Every structure is written in C-alpha cells, then in structure tokens.
Image (cartoon, rainbow, N blue to C red; front, side):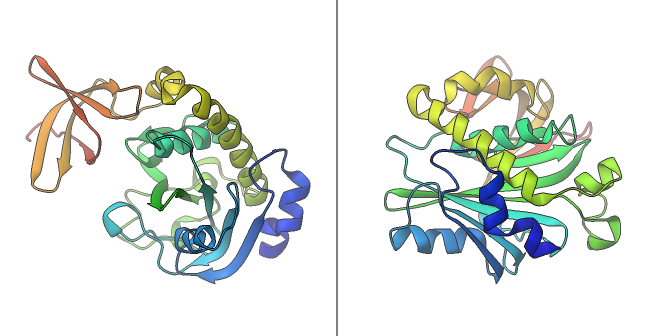
Amino acid sequence: MILNELHPARLKRNIRTERFGNIILLFDSVDSTNTIGTQLAESGFPEGTVVTVVEQIKGRGRIERKWFSSRSGSLLFSIILNPKKLPTGLTSLLAYSIIETLDDFCDGTMMKWPNDIYYKGRKIGGILAEGKNESIVVGAGLNINQIKEDFPDDLLPIASSLRIAKGNQFDRGVILCRIIEAFERNYIRWEREGFRVFKEDAEERLLYINTDVIITNGEMHKTGKLVGITEDSYLLLRCGGKVTVFSSGDLSLRRKNE
C-alpha cells in the first residue's frame, strides 16, 4: 500500500508539470529528505528533483527542532531549486502552494508565519528551506493519515492530521502530485514577478492576522499586532504607532496576561 501510493512511477504518471518532478526518488528510511536533497544537489541533480520517503528518522524544523512523523500517516518530501534571484519568500511560497492544494481536501488551512501549516488551531505541517552554494532545498512534512493514537502525548493538544479533521483516509501520492503542480506554477510566476504578486492572497490565509502576538528571535522578544507581510514575505508588526519588519523569528499568540 505504501509503496504503491508513493511509488515514483505512479507519481510520474499522475503529475502534470514541466520542470518539477521529472526525477522523483522514493526512499524507505532516511535521516531527512532535506539532507538527501542537499546531497543530490551537490552531486548535480537538476532543479525540480523531488525526494520523498516512507520514514524520516531525524526530521527537523527551524532551529533544529525535531519533527515527528509516522510511516503510514506522514507525507514527507523535498524539492531541489536553483533560483536565479535572491530566494526571498520561497518558504512562504511553498506554504501558500500547500494551502492552495489542501483546499481541495480540507478547506480552511492557514499559514502560521514563517513556515507552519495549521487547521483549526492545530499544526498539520511544517516547512524548512536550506541553502548551500547555488541550490535551495525546500522540504515539507504534512500530517495526512495519522490517527490520534499515532501522536505522542505531548503533541496531542497541538497537532492534527487531515484524517482526524475529515474522518477519512487520503491518497498521499495524489496530494503530493497536486502540491508539486501548484508549487511549480507559483514558482515560475515568482521567478518573473517575485513574491509580491502572492502577498495579498497569502495575507488572507495568515494565522493571527490583526491579532496581538509575540515574536521571538534569540534573546529578542517583541509584542505587537500582526498587520501583514511585506512583498518579500517578511513579517509586519505594529508596536504602538510604529510598524517594524521582521525577516525571521518565532511567532506565538499573545495571551491576555502577557
């Protein structure tokens, strides 16, 4: 079932792209798809190469945080990119492409800046972009078919999956093909026009917009109202009468007593 669902030959029969997915590699078990993607990029694999995996042993998010995944429930993949311009906004571009795609399966997913996918207040996905030399590898982990019993106790209050949300099982191969198609279409437009053409639509799917939040970056903690993102997908935070731009950081909802 797992190999049939994500087998490269099946994916290539079902995908409708020109540049992405011409090479699709499926591994049974790796440390992380981004690590494999980086190694492949260094050895000359072309832009658009897709790495997917059944089991990811050392999945990670931003700041080397661990990413939980399961063999039968997770969709884990990375894509090699060779952008000809500064890669500003690529993480948000993949997040937006995923949200666009998931609307056909589970309407109402949101992007938590800068790199998480949420549904009804619970995290169902994360994205990590890593660069080396001229290549960027963007990877994503999505909770598709997990049931509640699959999650560790500490994640139960904050994590979910499409299966939990909708009550039925999904074909991860179909979802992956649709995501790659959406991302290729958006990436080609990004090459021509930058992230600015996605800014307005992305803001409509931004979690905590017009809400009091806290942004943390190392020792820095700043509170204010999230008012949007820039044309490069940087965060805009209104603190008093001033709007400050943040290019990175961890975002959390501000509680009334904070």
